Image (cartoon, rainbow, N blue to C red; front, top):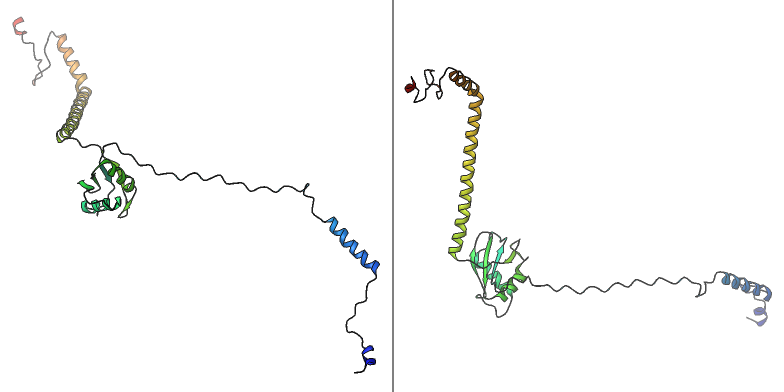
Length: 233
C-alpha cells in the first residue's frame, strides 16, 4: 500500500479529547465528594472497646487423699458386684495399686460377703493409696464405695454388744406384752361395768338396806353373808 492511502485511514474508535477546564471541574467534584465523606479524625473517633481479658484460670485442684485414720490398714469396700469373688477383688486391688514392686501380699481380703468386703493392706500408706484409687471406681458395672474400716474388736466384745442388744430387744418386747395385757384387761372391765355395773350396785344397796353385809350373791340369788354374821344371830 502507498503512503497516500495510509493518511486517509480513519481509526475505528476515537475519543475526543476533553478541554482542560472541564477535566479540572471533574477532578474538583471528586475531591469535594471525598472530603465530605472522609472519616473522622483520630481525636474525635470513638475508642474501640478493648477485649475483656479472661481471668486467669484457677490452678487445677490437686486431689487430696481421703486420709483414713492413722494406723488404719483395713478398708471397707461396699456396693460390690454380685459376680465378684474374693480372688477377683484381691487381684483388682493389686492391679489398682499399679506399682511395679507391688505383689500379691500388699493386700488381702479378710472377709467377703455378697455386697461388701474387708480388704486388709500391708500398712496404712498402702491402704491410703488404695482408698484414693479405688473409691468411685467402676468395676463390673458397679461404682465401688470404699471407706476406712474401724479397728476390729475382740470376739468377746462383739458378743457382749450382741447380748446387750438382745437383752434390750427382749425387755422392750416383754414391756409391750405387759402393756397389751393390761390394756386388754381394762377393756374387759369397762365392758363388764357397762353391762352389769348398775344392776350389781342396785342389788348391793338393797341387801345393805335389809341389814345384810354380804359380799355379792350366790348362784341361788341369796346374798353371800359375812363370815361372822351367824355368830351375831
